[in-house]
Length: 238
Image (cartoon, rainbow, N blue to C red; front, side, top):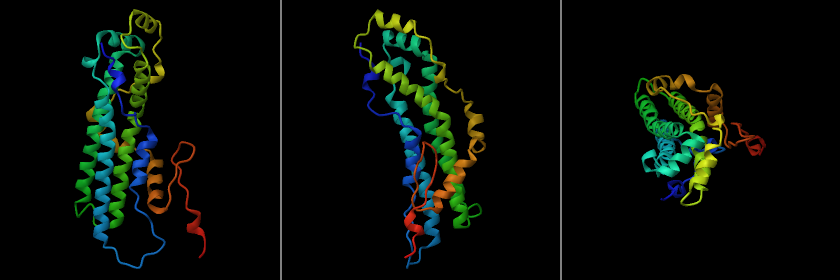
């Protein structure tokens, strides 16, 4: 009987991994330019960045969903250990939620790409940048709602993958004496309600950070939070 959890090769992404995607999409800010840049081209770039971020986020989440086995792929003995230690219903919920989040990233992208391609909604570069930031903020809000599920799955993977092959009754008995860790509660999302209200779940500080990211040349993370610092060189007189 194979332990399917030993086959998981991809790492479960952390919040910083998603933030790094957003930061990587920031275009370099030159000190000065001696050439004219067509504003319509910059507006198209905003749409490209929204599409790119959504694809990256969706792929990161789908790799987790695809990498973790469904309940039907887990051998009965390992399934028993999984249930006794973690509760396989919670595992299935977390697994499904990651799949839902992956699909919803594309929905968010399509919604904002429609707005970005609409002349009435996006008739200036400032409006396009604002819509881009709104799209990023919605994606990050979805990520944050999914983080407990990702942490739960990673905890399951770490424990289950370290079981000896052909785990026997002793491991099952040990797991039976283990009290479920309620710190890994999996949020139950009402999918349609969540999809309709995603914009209302955006943290205002995320929008502040994204606006700052558009302004400053060098972003950085500090103390695990979203903190931006300006490049000292940008304040140095030449």
